[in-house]
Length: 423
Ligand SMILES: *Cc1c(COP(=O)(O)O)cnc(C)c1O
Image (cartoon, rainbow, N blue to C red):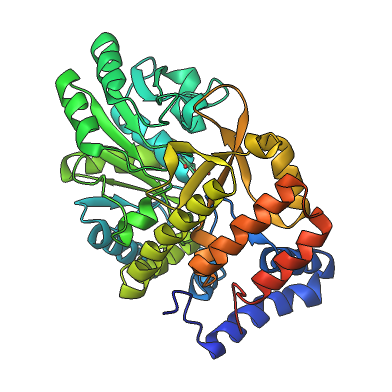
C-alpha cells in the first residue's frame, strides 16, 4: 500500500510551475538555489529525525494570498481590517487541531516549536520559577533550560536524566528531584528520546508536588495524530508541538490545553510573545491537520514506526549500539564507536555519501552518537526492504568498506526510485 502523498497532477503543476516560473523569470540567481535544494533533497537520503516532506497542498497554502495578510489578534477580534477570510481559515485550523487531538482548546499561531514552549512558560510561570525538565545532555531541547536560551536565563531549571545503561528515563529520579525542588512546572519531551514518555507517571509526580505538566511533543505529535503513539493530551496541562516534524505540515508550532487555560495561553502567544499571525502558515497547518485526520495518514504513521524498528534492528545487526535497544517512534539514536568512528566523523563521512543525519548526545559518557529518523523516507514511500538497504549502506561507509563517493551512487539509485514529489 502506498503511504506517499496523493498528488493530483494538475494542481501540482499549477502550484509549482507558477511559483518557480515567476521566480525564474525575475530572479534566476535565487531560483537556481531553490532548484538545487530540490535536487539535493531528492537525490540524498533525508534521515534527519525532525524533517519531512510536506504535501504539494501544504506548499500551495504557504505560497497563497494569505502570505500578504496582516492579522494581529484572534478570529473575531483582530487589530486589522480585511480579516474576514483569515478568520475563517484560522477557525478551521483550530477546529481541525482540536478534533485531531481531542483537545478542548488549540492555539495555532506559534511561529515555531520554540515559540510554543516560550508561550507555555509565559502562560504558567513567572521569571525565577523552578522547572524540572530532561537535562540537555540527555536530549532536552534548548528551551528546556539551556543557558544560551531564554529558558535557562529566565527560569531556574533542574534536569532529570536517563539511565546510563538502559537509556530510559528514570522516573524515580524525576520523583525525587520533584520532591526536593518543588518545581512550578515539569516538562516532558525530548529531541532524542526514542521511546514513549510515560505521561501518566509524569502526571502523577506533577500532582504530588502541585506542578503544572507541560508536554513538549514536538517530535511525536504526528505519530499521535496517526494513532501510532500515546497522546499527552489527557495528561498534560499544556501540550506544545511543532507542525513540521512527523506531522508533515508547514514549519510552525501549536499549543493545546484545557478550556480553563485557553485565555492565558492565547494571551501568552499574542500579544505577549508574538505579533501578527502568519496566516499563510496557519492555512497550511489547517491543510496538514486535514491530511493527518485521514486513514492514509494513520497508515503512514504506523509505517514510520515499523520502518524505524526495522532500521534500528539492522543497524544493531551491523554493530552499532542502538540506545534503549530499539525504538517505539520514528527516532533512533546510536553509537557508531564499535565500527571504529565517533559520531562527528561518522556524520561527515555519511554526508559525503549522501546520507544526511545528525549527531546527538549519548546516555553513556561524552562521545557523540548519531540521531536518525524515518519520517521523510516513509513519506517518499520507502518500506522495510529499503530500511535494510539503508542500514547496510550506512554501515559499509562507516566501516570503510565502501568509499563515500562510491556509496553516493548507490544512494542516488535508491532514492531515485522514491521521488518525494513525483510528477
Ligand atoms: C523541534 C523541537 C522544538 C523546537 O522547534 P523549532 O520549530 O525548531 O523551534 C522544541 N522542543 C522539542 C522537544 C523539539 O524536538
